[in-house]
Image (cartoon, rainbow, N blue to C red; front, side, top):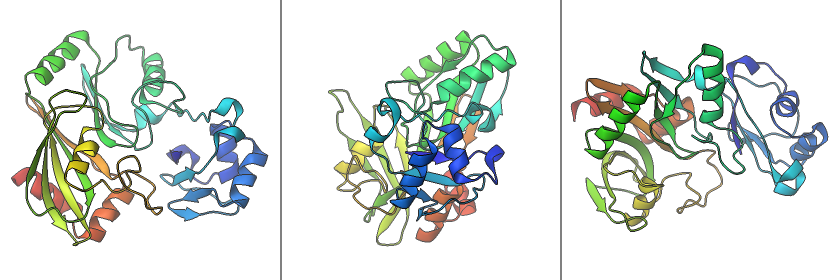
Length: 287
């Protein structure tokens, strides 16, 4: 389980933070620390430490040590603090990694939960989640405040009038632009991978999602003989990554162009391969 430390918990002790925001009891947290089952920013922690905002906590936990086999972490501010654009009929979020878009069985936290709290606080009666991102995928997530805009957006999706461009880090070398046109669950599925930088070990690629099937980019990466770094479901078997390196970077429809910046750890990973943020923006807007 991954947890991003909110700004309002800056300076909080790790044990206090986890006992306040999850169902973990104090003795269980100390047990996890003793057994090196907690990482902060990819470093194993064995003692109580003070947290900083945007720290990433990863907990390696077995179901049987939590009540009801469930670990709950719900931050009602996730929605409001990640808004990057809002007008009278839509809201755009930069969704963090490790958070589900919607409620579900054994879902530890979700954008939907935080959205409902935001609506209650701001007297908003209608809110529609217009599309979804996988739990471990970050980036642009669009919501509607009106039924009319929600319907219009779905029409644009159906007519392929929305451009969705992701950035990912692939294992190995992808030397040229490649289309993967392979059905998923018997449905037509098309993904275009465009490599922009490589260090001969991994490749940074922009990805056009032409259709929108569950796990589409991750599944189609396997068709390349590759996988997305951090994707333990579809091929990654390393132990040094705390996230999936897949981010919904660019969203365009009508007169709108939205670009969401990945978090520091994603940007640092891009830089280690040879690509900085200004260069990425230049490539994104001029190719």
